Amino acid sequence: MNNCFKSFKVDFNFSNKENLKLPAFRWFVNLFRQEKWEKDTFNVFEKNKCENSVAVDIGAWIGPTTIWLSNNFKNVISIEADPIALEVLKKNVKSSNCTNVDIIGKPLYRENKKIIFGLNAHNTTLAGEGLGNSSSQIQTKNIISTDTDIEIDSITLYDILKHKHSNNISFIKVDIEGGEENILDQLIDISKDKKWKVFLSFHYDWWSNKNIDDFVNSFKKCKKIKLYDNDETINISELVSHIKSNPFCSIYMEF
Picture 1 (tube, rainbow, N blue to C red):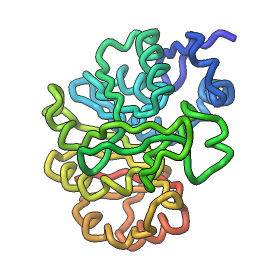
Picture 2 (picture 1 turned 180 degrees about the vertical axis):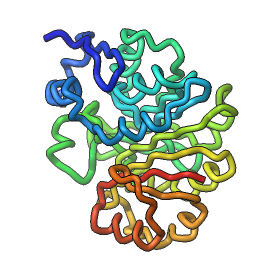
Picture 3 (picture 1 turned 60 degrees about the horizontal axis):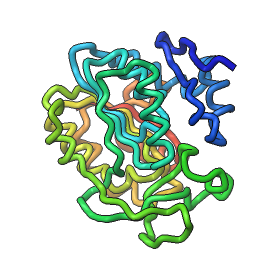
């Protein structure tokens, strides 16, 4: 199968053999070449693309979002902590001729510390596919429980602010398999200060604490909140209710 193709108006090259080692790759690439993989995500990207500014891709997996952003922004800061996905990401970015991407291979957390990162602790099917399957996550119990779990230094959003391209960031995408719980307050505070536009995926069922109500005051700092598949602005109570009833939803925020 030729894994060089155009999807969502961008040329992708997933032809290196490392992709084929991932259990999730075949179903992913079949959907992706048909523009059926996270179509709404790319609709949000399309509305926010800016060739003169920088995008941040937090939870890049093997590169579909990073490569698209690379073709539509001046630079991309791409973050992926899964060591298997990270190596494939690097190869896919290179083979897709994305020379404007800086890749950081560490997990994002609310503070700098050593954390345990590994297989999905909430879904045995996903965990059974091993690392590299797009669902790896920070282990909230902070105990190495499998041979594939690793201890790794985290970075914070404040570390991203030190990046050489940070002054030109306009858009940030976050999809980190429940890890958003640990950075949500910081993400909103910094985005409000820097006027970033944010596309955030929730994995509420995978949170350590089902404490979405604790973030109401943070959400109030947003100028505009939309559901990813809807152009209508929603209020805070609607947002909280939606997350509780749709724990794997995504939202778009402006400040």
